[in-house]
Amino acid sequence: MGKEPGSTKFQTDFRRHLREQNISGNLVHLLCEIAEASKYVINAVRTGDLGVAGTSNLYGEEQLALDVLSDRILRKRLMYSGVVCNIASEEMDEIFQVTSNPLGMFSVAYDPLDGSSLVDVNLAVGTIVGIYQGDNLLQPGRNMVGAMYILYGPRVSMVYSVGKGVYEFTMNHLMEFTLTREKVQMKPSGDIYSPGGLRKKYTPENEAYIRYLEDKGSKLRYSGGFVPDINQILMKGKGIFMYPALTDSPNGKLRLLFELNPMAYLIEQAGGAATNGCMPILDMVPEGLDQRAPIYIGCKEDVAKATEFLNGVC
Ligand code: AHG
Ligand code: MN
Ligand code: MN
Ligand code: MN
Image (cartoon, rainbow, N blue to C red; front, side, top):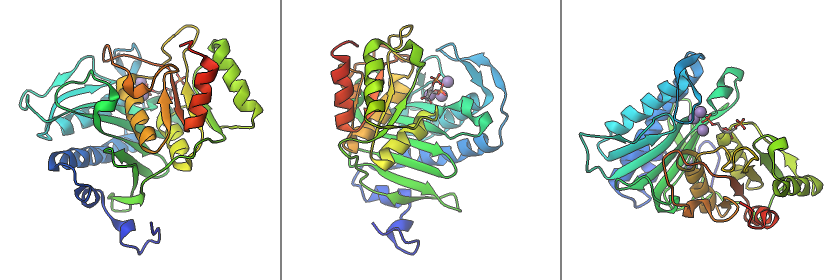
């Protein structure tokens, strides 16, 4: 695509682009509402209170004021969107049913502010969203009708897919999202690795895989923020992110509904892969809202290699 500022495509805004995708008007509306909500989230991130909220979420994590505020911003938008019936978030203990719209068309699972503990040191953070048709949130991620993330970095970018490829939009000086990349595709393998979790808690299989990556000369690129770490791999089209099982947490850290499924959907749409070591992330049937899973996500061959090292131990 033409990237010159004058080109028409470069200025294609999100809503116009979505209308051309031949998807339902309700889904267009929902995606635009989420994009609008992210503008308030970025404002909160940039100017909001950096302290704690004094509460904890269902994982026992201390919530920051920004976690709670971002959650409220998104929940309200979704509630009043008119097309959503069930809402689940990393910061809510249970499914929020939109009583005014019990038969809404979509259910949404989101992480309102991933990496929130990085805001005080001014690193990049993001919002992650998965969208399901109907009212069932506990179904395999493969059934999602769309996924997106918004990355709050030096620039604000939004990456989404509705199963028709992966597109990136970037916020311009008028706070509009305009198309910057289309049909993003990953290479078969790459030389970046982003390993999450304490290395001393790695199992021997994971330790061996990391040593393999180091020996082959992969570059360590890990920020501690899932959204910027995945965005780097997706946009450069190369590398692997992993947050494996740890000796004291067999399911790793990251959450299936709020973090893993949307990212797995986007990476698969771009020709990459995502597994828990034994099966594709998108085929896992969630047993509960708070389910965690180990993840290996990125270029197909790198993910396959990780699976080889794990040899069924997962
Ligand atoms: P959250 O801020 O939503 O609780 O999750 C943060 C995640 C993710 O961004 C990152 O990949 C991972 O936690 C890092 O965790 P640790 O630093 O605890 O290993
Ligand atoms: Mn958290
Ligand atoms: Mn998170
Ligand atoms: Mn979070």
